[in-house]
Image 1 (cartoon, rainbow, N blue to C red):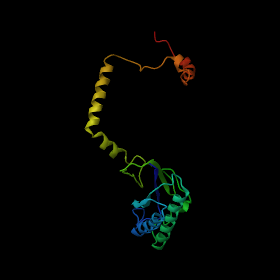
Image 2: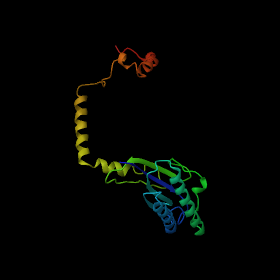
Image 3: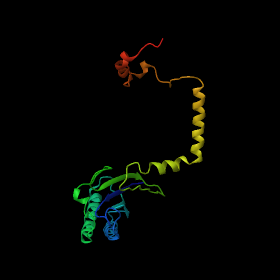
Image 4: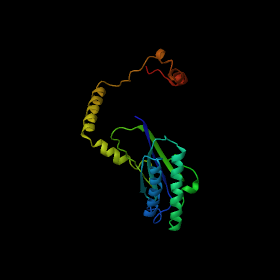
Length: 203
């Protein structure tokens, strides 16, 4: 099967009101632009969403990551939305496109991009975690809570604790490792040589 790419590109082109949300007219503008791209075959499918005051473009295509055509399409979409934002006198209209670059990072100004290329299966669900005005670990708790609520995890954790208690009953122990002569291909001999002066006889 051929590979497919999912590109999620977001930008703050104007808040409504303040930094709280995205005006419906901006979403409609983006949908119209991406619908033309889908009709021309540039995209397989798309979805326009909003998170806070960020306009989020989720696009599927077969052009791979870092594709200039897809990134250019997103940029043109944001510029078109910025024109509408300025006409509506929205807060911070064109804020991110003004930075003139796509940012593959989690912080800082400018549009952001996350992409993934993979071999698509018959049924391929996609989950996109979008956030605005929050920290990078915002989803850590809800994800971990849902995972660790699983009864199967509780059983695995119980077994691990039982094994730990059994090992502790036998006193101190050191995990098995290869002898020094078999570790020549690693950095361990060099590290041990540097630490030699710190070792002391315990007897």
